[in-house]
Image (cartoon, rainbow over all chains, first blue to last red; front, side, top):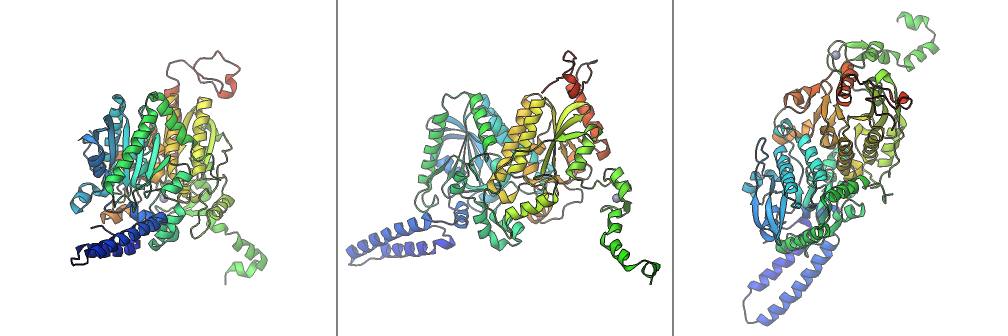
Length: 318
Length: 307
Ligand SMILES: [Zn+2]
């Protein structure tokens, strides 16, 4: 059973009807099969219609959908021999960010990303994907290790933002994020980032200053959450919908603004309806990006990455 | 009826009232609530003579007190795309910008200048908190990139002085990208072997604190400055606890190993001057040559002359 979003009500009703029909037994099975097929067709069209024109606020909801594949789902579907590496060697282990060595179609990669968790227990364990300084310092450590062994880095971004806690501040949240951005810019190996769900502010860009930055079709990436923006600029959290429009936070907006390099199409009805397929598409996009950087010297990769960000926003905006 | 109403003609009375002279002559310190005469305040660089509270100052004041002898030259910052998102909340972003510019000395929330500190060529980029809370958008980011380039070209030290609430929301994702751009810019300065210092002033928070502002070779903070990633209220709402008064102050950061030193405003020029001199003049005997005279004496040791 799916978790449905508000705007998916007609989809939920139609799927309910199809389920009911399937469980009907009687002497009219041929007619039932016809009806199911007809409704399936209608469902496909409804999904195409709904997901073809999602508003920024609806995309925000899809990006945060609880059934959407998270970091651990990508590990399960996409990577082999994943070996998590823990700790920042300074203070602790922060499970809001997971990282480790893995194989992707035979290639060794260092894969790092936010994990939000999928039920109460795992959400608490991963702090809902909101990392403390230790998470970013672990990411820095793993990026440096990858550089040492000439292994590409892949980051999967999915966070509402860095954790706003007193302990996080005491241990230098700002410094940890800044250092992570600096490390992204500095390493002499390919760095590929994919926003798989929510790209929330500083906590997201800390892992996303990459040679290739990709976004899933229904993911978002923003300087502030629509709710936060609404409460500051409109002085009302109810204006989140309006703020989501104004912020231009969809993958399509970011591609147009020259902030990301490409969009990965999601399966019909969003990644949450077909997680395995979504993971497969992300895998193909990573391989394509990695192949484009094969045989490019590390210093060149670093220079290109830096120049790309220095040039960003200088041209093609107004 | 006082003697004033009796003896001063109405016209003059009106004049006196309109120019609100009394408010401008005396300032009330927010910290100790004592009244301070404006001349004393200016003389003391807007530090309260009673309790030592450091008040916020303008970017211009800041440049004057950081450069040797208060002498510096500001540079024209590059033009950048304005309002790329066509952002509008309750007001249009372009209107907010115009209103801010009408009151401001500079085009946006950053001023970049060059001059000398401790006798060494130095580029300083200063945030103007009064310009939309010192928020960092494309213009500020471009200004920092320009400051970094100028430091490289002039073979100068770079000091950045943030006073900012964080990213400029009205520029959306492009304001977030300034965190990467500014970090890339200062990395180039560091790779040239030039010193990069940060002076954290009140306030330095959000995306500004989480990028170039925490990456200085040496991190200096002004007494009492609020410095942190998340806002105090956001944190209190998250942990549902009241935070101690000194939370996120410069002194708190010093205690937690996040800054090298907390330096009173009146000692900043001397402190930076001493540090830059030790880093840039590492052998005994080598003398400092002011940049403008350097070309005339190309054989002088210890000074990288031209740009
Ligand atoms: Zn005082």
